[in-house]
Length: 316
Image (cartoon, rainbow, N blue to C red; front, side, top):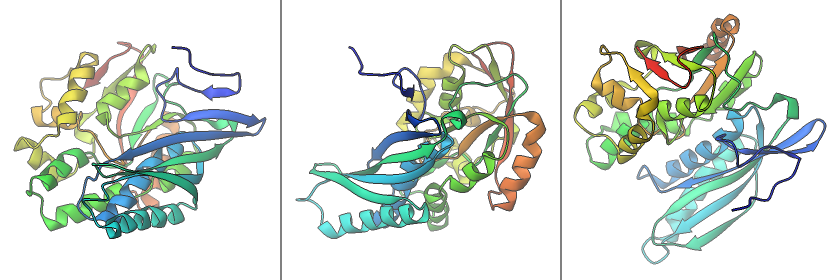
């Protein structure tokens, strides 16, 4: 299959990156991404907020600023009242306003399964694009949001999660990665991605596929929602966690001391997860301090880039 391309594409179909990048001029490139999914919570307004935050995140992860968006909707008109769709759209609009993004259109179809998301365009300087590659031995890895949303969403669907847990995870997923992105751009960042459906280990694996380096994680430093640990121990794991594990477990080596529950959580598919930032060791403490000052309290250094073994993730 021949994919159309030209020499203005900076990041395209041949990469594993979060979005595509097309150069417009010497000092401007556009980032383009699209993401939509089925409801993960019952509240339609908050579903709209979360879906919008999730779609916008790819632009932040690549060092850009989202500027415009288009709605993507699949709606079961014969099974649901149109007021539900209005609440979803309003949630998305409010999140776009928060991000200073303008809605310029969209497309909807009647579908048996409800879906919502955005196609997003952002701006970035061609020399300041962040991708998943360019890691350097000695760099540190910083994660800006705790893990566990996949497990907790499974608990919500099963009627196990408390009201307090539902409120906390909803707010977490609806939180933009904008503040974290603005902070990281002040420092010497070598690579970045956001943690979504492939889980922490899946996205880390993408960063070191065919690379001349590996990654070492400190399991005890990885921020995880406490309730996710509880629910995972009960076996409330989403199907996506098992798919992620089957796909990437050959690249991962766990120390015997790492709890089996934690091993599963590191494959847990996230919705609107945090940024995973790879930067120089010298800048790491300053980055964490400034993230904390912005209210990103659970940002943590979770590991570092190592020269060997290449293409492997060691979890200790």
